[in-house]
Length: 521
Image (cartoon, rainbow, N blue to C red; front, top):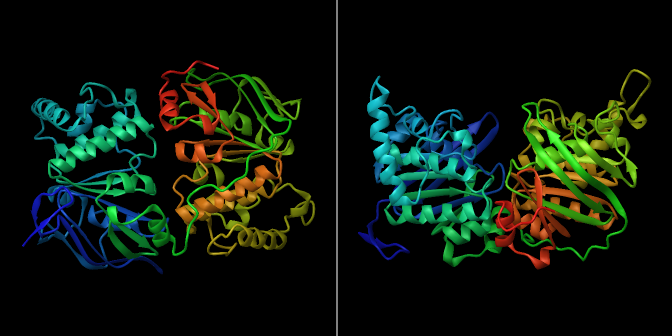
């Protein structure tokens, strides 16, 4: 029997991928529960769900990273056990990970053949790969210099190399995990053109993303997961972002940021000619000047790696720089004994770092221990000169977990037992409840599901409305545009321009993020 796809082509009814009754548990946690899904050939199939919904586990089973406890995998109608990734590759499956698996000091060509050499001699493999890459680049708009070092390529071009690796191994099925998380809007648009080209050539694509707009723009079909189960599979053309969000979370979700106009007051933060040189002698900040007023959010837009991290680190006291930083008119020490994070906190600066797991939490420590890191010298937490009042901290943490809707609300669980969104809430609760004058917040919703995003945005807006100054760094342009009262765009360690959100759009910001059409402020 033949069916007609959305592209109008006749195709056999056999799915490119069919998973039947897949279950997987990690100890008492049921990551996947009796999941069945059919992905038709020559389509782009989206998979969405909250953090911890089981998306990554399911794709890891398909790619051979995990072995299912129960269930079957069919490739093109044939039962295909996949015990490891090599078997998946031989079955025509390729995976492009969110964090690329590339050797930075190897060339594009060397990375493409790595693990797929034809023999002990590399020269024949390199020669074959060069010809194949030329053909693939022309066929799919995957142009990239085969002799370039990976470390010299932009993130967008590195992603193309990952796709080329999969296609070189003759993958007919591509799994992409959060592929646009570190791309500029122009790079994301180019990626979508590549995916459309792959689809036209009959490739099957599975797209894992938390961005509903991308799902609506690029996919043919979308499957929704919640708490380890498949809750729905629908044609993209027959649904909406609001319906998908409700299927993901199990309740109606406000997708837009609901906030009244800002009423900014006096300057809280003033930065002039801030410069940072890293340990390799590379200048990462090149004369940054900006200000943030009470009762406003200044959003910093930019592709990751253009100095935003260093800006947050210097302001937060975890790195040194030169120039001038003033809080409420008072100069901040940038290099001396009062230039550390503890001194910043004493001056009313709270910091939610970009990487919650490496910089915001100690993953093996409990939620209640993490809830006071950086503030553990507070007299309220001291039982006496030598001991902390653990019971008081635990009681306070219970209140924070209730107010910030941390699930499960157990202060004795280690941080690693919580989903990404709930880990972020633990960090936010710790910093926001100190009632800071200035909140530094990096990537507030990175890897966070829709329900938690809504909550986190509400907390930030409430802090702004309470008259606090907020410096928000995000690679998500939609977040920058909806949350910010003013937007500064960074490129190569400089401020390329400043805009009001109501007077700009993603296209203009994207050009500034790429260093185009901007005048250095």
